[in-house]
Length: 165
Image 1 (tube, rainbow, N blue to C red):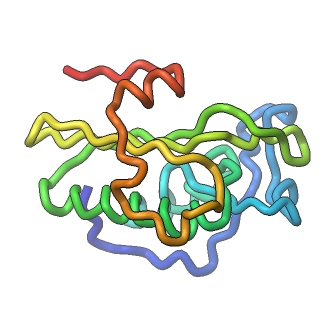
Image 2: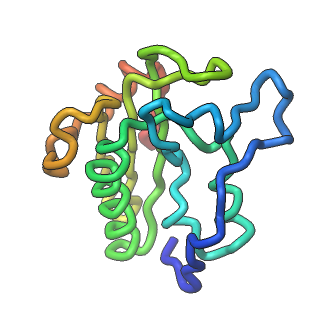
């Protein structure tokens, strides 16, 4: 979707998702001094066409621990690329997620081993996949294509099946 309003991010803050049972909830404080950023699954910049929807991207149920330089550098490039494709082709479908484990933060919040993004361009019937390790190593300078992978690799590591019809 091409955004028209582009509400600013200013004033938005991470908050627990009280629609989840307490045992499943995480809190912003779980990340304090953890060394990890709060990484959006559904990215704020793609959903800033509605203030209500944009606020929902800051629910902790949409957040996973993401290495600082992965989040701020490489993953930011991947997200900008998906928005570029949406503008260029009018529509893209995007699946973003994280999988695996390298440990836990406070409150038993899983630290994923991998982050993935699958971009489908209907106009071209084309899939593009990214699979990046959740690390700071080399992420400040990684080129976009460094973690470009076949969709099958994402399926194998994430244990999800991507419908290719």
